[in-house]
Image (tube, rainbow, N blue to C red; front, side, top):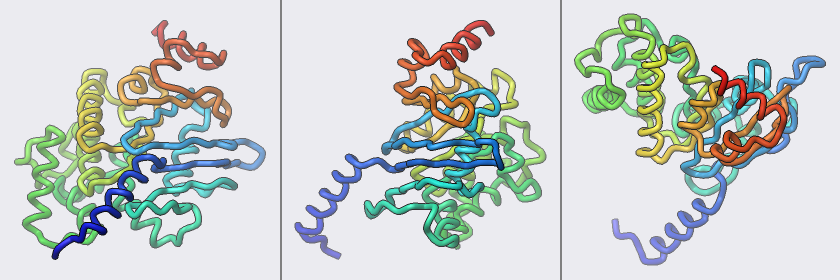
Length: 275
């Protein structure tokens, strides 16, 4: 099929517009648990290829925010505008549930802190990766298995273990398998909830190197929730600091961590330095 000059020009215009527009626009996002605030009036833009780190101590509201974005919790107020591949901005909180589920299987991905919550432990490693492809419409067994083997290698798991179940893997390998399962479909946005939590320091370092390389290689946008400022510094371009469900400081990662302005951020940074 021949593509006309006009169609090529339109495609270039659309690509330029997408580059100038946020991939995700969050405004007024609020979630309460009775009288207690989970998160309140959260707003930010996320740009293509950007990694936003969300930091704060336990109970600060960062996991509630991520759960609301992912659709695991229904917010009480706010909007989450997502720019699809055609450049249209749609409120993912208002779209029909089947469309939201399809989005979660294709353009969005969610990496959980405990990989056992993000894997099917009784299904083979290859099957875990292949399920994501099949959910997106893939049906050719040979190509699905080939993609699974390729992704195992990309996350530094011997492709010869494609038929092993995740139960036979270490915690670090399970987390790498969960990452492969989520990224095999080529998502544009990845939500990560404490992706290195509970892992040994040496395993964390390898996983962080892997994540950083994949984010750069695939041009991913990501939101990373973590209490570990070292993880935030390595992965995030920009930081958002939360306390008691609210954002108290935001800015470029190095700027926030090297010259914190809010008293709470100063406390977080000084506490990390003492460890």
